[in-house]
Image (tube, rainbow, N blue to C red; front, side, top):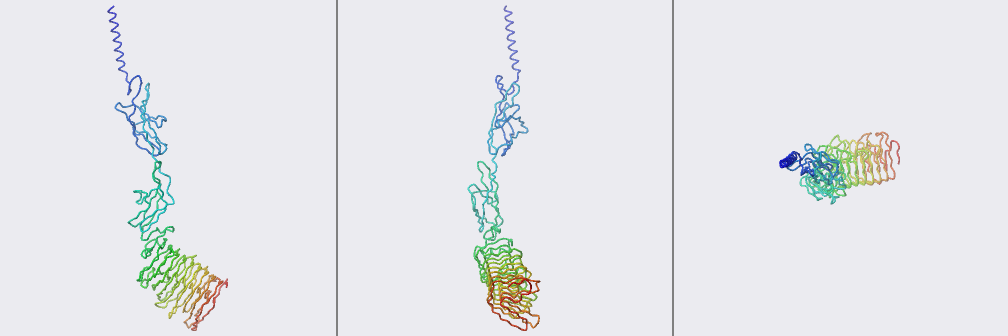
Length: 534
């Protein structure tokens, strides 16, 4: 009995030992206990790149006990297998939005997945899609002032290195500048794209030279600086400008738009007598291009001494596309040399730009001659010669010209215009002239409004003053023609046409025959050609 009992006890203990040994041989990986079958949870999540539309998970970390296979999810969506060697990217996300990224150890067999480790992360804000509009910049002696900047915007005056709310800034170095204006960064959006405003800190009081933002001129030095800049730019006077007391000899080269703004150029004394270059053409200004425009400018008490070589001169400019509301007064001393023909006018020497216009202008000019006898001349109170289609309206001139003892091969003189040549359509309307003309030439044409006038319509005009004509040649071919409005037209210009309507003349004539053929008429002398209307 005792032996049996002992045997039973031995068998029981043996069974217990076997069970313990078997239990010790069972591997529960990363588990806490066999009852819960729970795996270790991650301890951290590492993100590599976050954009406005994506989040990249670089690594999932575990504690000292480590972990097995891993899976991740975002905002509780489907779990995705995760490989630490390549990471995982959640894309197609919404900008500026907070997401919850979770990781856990993946379950297997009888073991459930571990508890999740979660981490919040926010996608980046997107840049504002708004770009400022209606923001403008003005510059005055280096100081920039912005208009149209709101509290939502910020400004950079250093090419984007820094931004602030400042709307004024003073530059210390001249040159081209770019001002940047953008919408500020907010809790919802990053800062938007910049509005780029180009400005120029230059030798002028301000402006960039564009039609909407002309260069601003306040001083004589700024006026001279036109020659050093884009000759086709736009300029605007802000102040009356008095020229230096000593004569100046450098002409201002200009072919853009000059807005006189009702200001004056006072007492310009200009002497080009030692200048034989092309830049001696003109008077105060010289244009070397087309489409030159001058508006609302007064030139007061000018004295221009021309160079002996160039041939086109005016107190204001040699030629222009448009002259509007310009007033000039002064004297031109014309330096003459042999074998030259000169065009001289109070405003400009010649109109040769097609479809030009002179409107609301006036001139009070005296023309004196110096030097040697020359081939010919064209004298006009406003324009010496017109060689392109042109309109002159609402303008007037007072001209005094005398070629004295000089005798020319040909001469054309008029109260407003010396002569028209080559043009096919010229209109002179609602204008008047006062003349004091003395013209001596082998062939001369003088008129109270215009000397030679082919293809010219003259309407609502009148002339007063005096005209003296003389052939000064004992030659049967010499011809001097003078008319109260115009000397007329000639057959030498094809078959010219034109008209005179609603005009009158009160011009006194002094005729010196000198064995020449002289024709004088109160309105028009020579009306040869076709389609004449009086």
